[in-house]
Length: 457
Image (cartoon, rainbow, N blue to C red; front, side, top):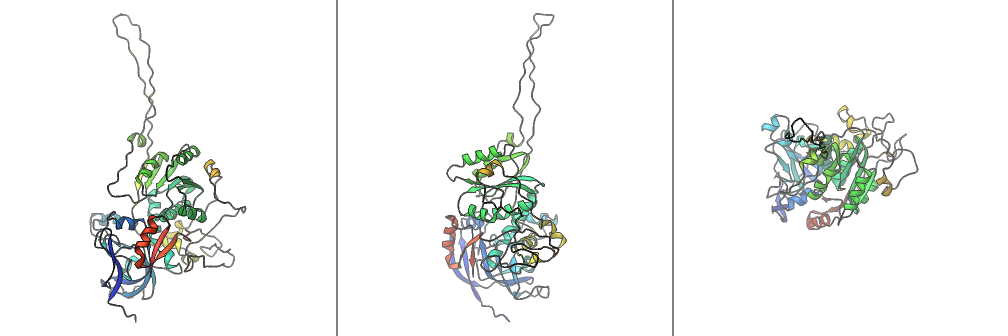
């Protein structure tokens, strides 16, 4: 029997930018709750917005919305339900009322009483313990706690994938190489993208992207003036892209992104933008007429000299770009699919039918575009297609070893030799901090020394 302490250490914000490490009571369990002893909790760009009082944050608050740990206590109605003390789990941070207008329509993401652990109304995982409803925790197997903090952002990326719904053979441009952008980029390649271009400033994140082989083409943007690189992308892709994803959270980049979308294409605003931000697009770009052509006829001589002359102006038929602009926020019910991608032990057995669509074999790369020829990643002389799996050992490395009949780095999804490529995590969480080092963690993220960080216990 686990003896729980009365109090715990936590990072607590009393107001935006005002935080302290404090001792607070261990959370009391509601009847359907489980208590999780936190091993790791991811830190993402949203936490910077929360620090500044942006996003949908509410104070006072214990942040942390990407929690991984072990169950140490069960509420009275959470017992005997296939979950036990000691289970290794991650947690979906959202809690929904189930009763409002949107919940009753099956649109829980728009719940009028939406609460989220570590974000709005509920304490999160920057603490030694946190309580979640049993239905919001999911078992893990061998993925390390640090890498498992990527399950929540991968769930959000899967929601984005569904929102974008890219047709097969799509050409896609992703702007931004942050952690969630790297997850979404990999998912887009696995689910419809025939050719994917990743454009982001050079540095650690772009280096990580190349190491993980997340794209077909890489364009490093100049932080001071990216105009030359944007022009190069346009020259290499004169018709634009079927899908453009803005994943930086910068409004200026979002405004520019629209101009890379081809007629009938989609623009996804995937980043988290500062409160009150506005974009300025001309409706002519979204629903545009071609340049007007005018033809004037010479005066027509009729029977009377007093009859006025006539001219005829002809307009070309209107051409509608029909660009779809959409957004993607959070996720609903994607945690099982995210785990199927990231926890390689889950993928070592036959996936359930509901997950088959998320375990597609990777397709061969297309020939490089002109832009690719200028900035191509290292290539292998081997003609075989690379296959990978996520997760790994406690250090984030590939810990599965080789399997009979399957080369190292490859995993049979069903035991019949068919291999599934899953999302890679190695190196994305590249910095970890103790709770007491929160200030240093914030600084590392702002200075872009961290692709992604995690608080560890």
